[in-house]
Image 1: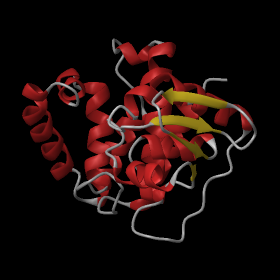
Image 2: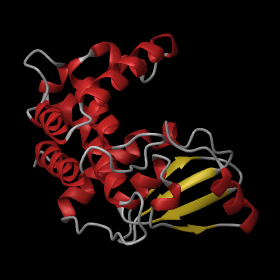
Image 3: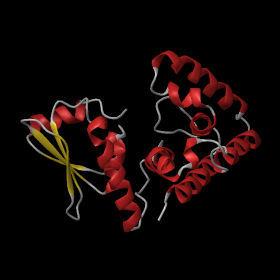
Image 4: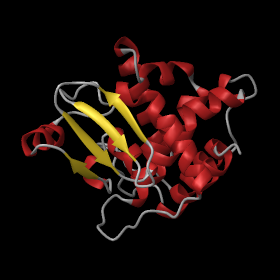
Length: 215
């Protein structure tokens, strides 16, 4: 099953329910900045590239703030979310299912949780069906080495139901144990908002907890 479209729907509904000025786990962003980011990365190539190419980052940031400012009212914000919800334009590479899955499956899950888990301790993980969890796991292990590249340790990702993945090898390792969605949140730098456990030497665990993780 292709989970990107259902994930887009859930994210759009979560954005709408939160309103334009709700907090998120994305540093410095409210929901309208997050909605602007989601729209621009599919509709403006320069904004998507600006996430990774420093010379274009300033232009991308300005474009994001401009769109977010225009979405400051309930009506304009709802319109922006509808534009995101309608999907990428016809000629976008994200119209290709494999590209869409690689670019958006993890993105939509993490950003949905960025809204759900921000500003409160009263959140609980969503109940995910097994196939969706497996799809998130498959995406995670493709990029885990990149996401944990800043950690000076070996990293082993472990699911409670058995599967494990060596994300990075080193003389000293830490195992991170959790459901695929929680491991995904941790790997994307949401370390204080991920329900995971660590197995390893105390000093190694302390090093992991202080490391910079994610893109």
